Image (tube, rainbow, N blue to C red; front, side, top):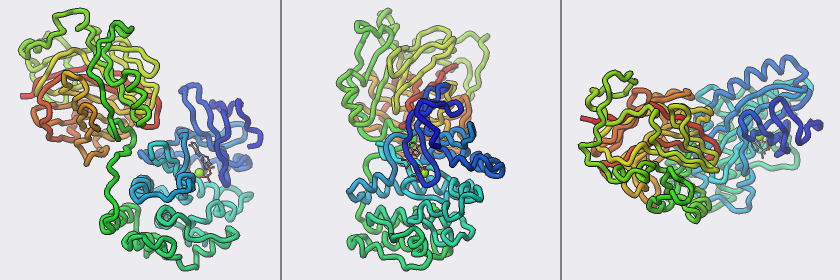
Amino acid sequence: MDTIRPGQMLGAYRIISQVGQGGMATVYKAYQPSMDRNVAIKVLPRQLAESPEFVTRFQQEARIIARLEHPHILPVFDYGESDGVTYFIMRYLEAGTLKSKMEAGRPLSLNEIDRLFTQLAEALGYAHSHGVIHRDLKPANALVDEQGNLFLTDFGIAKLLESASPRLTQTDAIMGTPAYISPEQARAQTVDQRSDIYSLGVILYEMVTGRVPFTADTPLAVILMHVSDPLPLPSILKPDIPEPIERVILKALAKEPNDRYANATELLAAWKRALEDANTVRRAPEKILPPVSLASSARTSAPAPKAVAASGRPTGWIIGCVIGVCLLLSIAGIVVFASRSQFLSFLNPNTATPLPPTQTLTPIPPTETPIPTAVPTSISDVLLKDDFSSKDWGTLNETDDVVEYDGEALRMKIFKKNWFVWSTPNGKTYENIHTEVTATNNDGEATTAFGIMCYQQETASDYYYLAMTPAGEYTIAIAEGDKSDVFLTNNDQWAKSDLIKKNASSYRVGADCSNGTLTLYVDGQSIDSVSDSTYANGGVGAFAWSGENVSSADVTFDDFTITSLK
Ligand SMILES: Nc1ncnc2c1ncn2[C@@H]1O[C@H](COP(=O)(O)OP(=O)(O)O)[C@@H](O)[C@H]1O
Ligand SMILES: [Mg+2]
């Protein structure tokens, strides 16, 4: 690894710099020209690549790890071998790890612990349900971004290294992180998910008390303490720790696997109950939401729409991003950017005035090819059918985003994290409608959200939006002026649905916006429904929204229809 230098190519990746060195591997930041993105490359010890046995095993394990897809598991993009080194390609995440967060010199609040621990336990529970045991759970393997989102990494790598090569002794491998090792792992016995539960217990212990339970002069001494020393009570280190919370830690850290929580879900449930019992903590009011979080905290004020023809955006209305406001929004960590087409409004005074509802009905010629719809509707119910051949939708071309026609389709590209861009076909008001659009996720990024917005008010800063991601998440939400958006589904959190096909290239997204009920459809299946009667009519459009940690989104919309709900 000493031969890997900045500027050098490793496979298809150009090394930028070394970002970290762990017990067994070195992590580099690198650039992937084909995708125009930075990635992290974890390079395993050079001598491993010389063992054919290891290489086979590595490929098997890597495939299992790459299949894990969870908002709190760091995605592994690829793995490979070149120039005698074996490596994983992962999403690159600036910011730090849970380790650096805990070392920052201030104790974590129970609120903060709750948020991080919940993300950690959920990620772990998900991996366990897919048959993957982590085996090296420790704060250094939990990357945390600036918004406080946690991403667990290095699944199964410990096992890979343990079994790797005669040249790496087992002690070398397990010695990587004695502070978090379970007694059975320390004894080199076979481990199951309860070994991870123990390590998770050590992390919880450390979060709550500020230190790990066992420390000693040598790694071996620490390992032996895990096997046979009684656990120093958390309340000795931190006398004000609520008793129910201490009990959860003690049970997670039982020496005997049978005496622990059987799985991460049980542990998490017990933790939540303890928090409630302790009555010391309110749920954090702010939402830190995977994978995207327009709604996460302040969705700051969007000024009234401005016609910007004079300032060089002849085809758009811009809200929410007059320069000063953008700055404020960025500081708050949340940026809202929206564009709205009023192209025709500027050029054609007739369309500037909202049309009376009776005139919104656009009959379509019966010869048109039918497109799949989630809700059967008769042709006379069609209010708008748009194959994007007539170029009415709002477009724009900015540093952070582009909305443009791509042949007979509308393409939205975003080059910034957590950035929301939308466009509408007209300035009309609709009510009691079913809308559908085909959305193609061009770059395969699973955390990109997209969907339909409806009942957009005159000011354009109030509307509903129905969003889904290729990771299977969704929300039905309301945006109101300068208030925080509210996710009306799943207690104001992203929800997950198995009905949403994972990582499909295209989805048919549908929405009922009727008086008092909003329903999201994906590929003809009803995903969820909510009641809200704040708005009873308004404008309709499509949007794309880049992930919280992903500075790109690329979505193409086609075959947009609005039909009336009877
Ligand atoms: N995907 C990533 N993006 C950015 N930094 C990373 C990434 N993965 C690991 N790192 C950094 O590299 C360091 C070394 O990682 P690793 O070799 O796994 O050792 P350890 O987990 O023991 O610290 C980590 O502590 C972290 O700071
Ligand atoms: Mg690591």
